[in-house]
Image 1 (tube, rainbow, N blue to C red):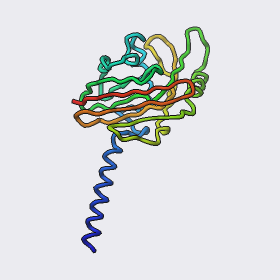
Image 2 (cartoon, helix red, strand yellow):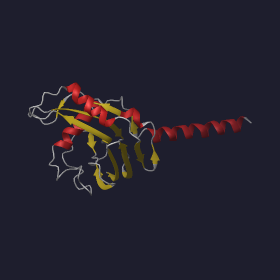
Image 3 (cartoon, rainbow, N blue to C red):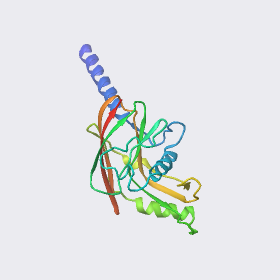
Image 4 (tube, rainbow, N blue to C red):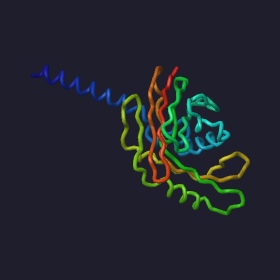
Length: 206
């Protein structure tokens, strides 16, 4: 009987460790990455995304050819879409990178000549991002739950250096990894009243 209990305990311990290993791919939203909060990374994601011409951008990219564009440091940004149909991309990612990307998000900014306050911009962004009917993150076939806890609301930030265009971002962002070397399949997206997106990345971490 003692031997049976011992074997059962080992089995439960193994299952617990396996579950923890699977859960570790998704980083909690409160954890800092490379010395910055994930709210700061959300603002930086928008600065990265906005640094491209719209017609030649990782967000409009249909294949993944621009996946490595303007990437630097310990965090690797993945792009969503402008609310188009499912987009599938192929991407090579250096080992050791934490992936950061939006399941779905919005950004509002102060047009030139406008006197809109940061509080007004934040309210507009929040209204657009409230009440998602779906948030999806799937890594190598494992579906993650509780993604509403990954909502990030930035304070005002400069969208373009030197341009003085204050912006506010609101949305559901996740940090993942670093993933092990090899092939991985990443599915993510979300549905809001005014927008939806669905993205698949076939990743090769090397």
